[in-house]
Length: 367
Length: 270
Image 1 (cartoon, rainbow over the protein chains, first blue to last red):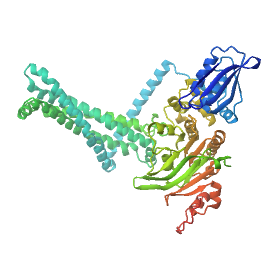
Image 2 (cartoon, chains in turn red, purple; image 1 turned 180 degrees about the horizontal axis):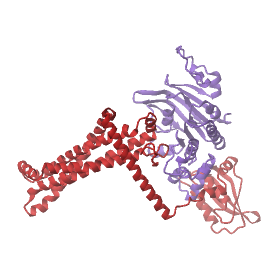
Image 3 (cartoon, each protein chain N blue to C red; image 1 turned 120 degrees about the vertical axis):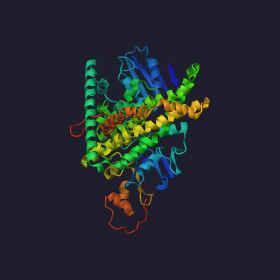
Image 4 (tube, each protein chain N blue to C red; image 1 turned 120 degrees about the horizontal axis):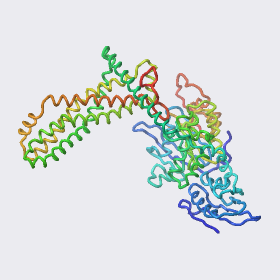
């Protein structure tokens, strides 16, 4: 009874597993050839086929024919010796070469392996809910402390504007603002184009296509531009701030600031929040312009003269609308970025930097 | 440390031929050539900034040298692509300076990852093999821990276990002793020796820890940041006792740089 399967990597020296009767009622499972990571799974399958109906009293594994082997391959012998493959029958391994015996000795004892397999106790459902709730409240507290620290930092910067590091404000303005122009342009232009294009057909039924100008103006200026600019700024720049300050935390740069007596909030966070708060209305205004431009483009292709579109827009929109749009969203945009910076600051250095540590009493949000 | 018997006559498994490493216009090392023999612990030495780690990263195929070939059993990793490159990458494992363990997985899962990706072993066998690897580096009791809960030495040992997961014939270790206390460092050296002698694994180790070099190295080469060349090759004890290059002597005798350079570099030893 012999089954041998060449493995893809070892066509020349396949692994062979044979079961034959031995003396004194002992069955002998002879393993030979190359028993390594590329043949281990095959060898195990064949051994399992042989041992499926095994009813013998004792099993011996003749390993003298194994020419090459590694730890993955020898896991088969370990399993046979431990009685894992033929239930209740622990095989005796014979003839294994010394260097391979050395590898086999690397396997842990059954007790050690059993201890390893013990799964960590899972928390009961109620305890999970309790822990999650507690964690949520702790996060709220950390956020509140962080906002407090930011307000304190702003107050200090107002008293002594030299502390503000204006160059950094400029850098952030460029990174989060100027560099965000392409994506803001793309999204706003598409919004304007799509809204105007989709509105054209239903409005045509009422002969009211000229009111596309009113609609695009109101929708972009009052609602969509502020919302989407806020989302872009919070997503793009907030994530960038979090990554930047998180990396600084891992590199112990924040620790260095603290030991130099510099408050990381004042040194790093204030500039970003200040720059982003200024940026929000500017970017929103830009988005409004591009969005309306997209709508105007569609109307021009429909044959409306620019002067008429302009007059319609002028009638529909007032300065009031622009101010409402720009102001209402700057707050939401800012708070999103605050939380990005806050989460980054609480990240922990070390091999798993993304574990959030609880804030300590001395430095809110920077434990 | 005595050299593993038979190593001196063993065939070369890695041949580095006329390799020049540069980052843009900044040449780090010029025309480096040496061979690593099967079963030996081969150490790449040199002062800070001489290009040891760069050479290692070229050897493991992360960076491409400007010129030269790096052959594993005759196959060049510099030009290999696709399946050929994957096959070459399977010949060795790498332990990075900080262990580079994946923080989201526990230690056992880290070691099991290559087995999951590259073998068709069953789940139980993979656990068994990963446990055996951890046992080999003495880390089995910490199998269920996350890397963040390990000490620096344990992280490096776990890094070695992961590098060994697929039983490669060659292990590259980047600064195994850096940042470890003497006891942990000696423990790691012992692990390297045991793996080298017991399993016949070839080690290529980048380090500048003198004690570690004496403890593990069969042969070593030394790179120099000033001349940007390889300035010595041989057994560490021989280099220490017989080197004629003043920089090599200084390095092995742990002497500080002389206040004024007399300009004489002396003849290079090999």
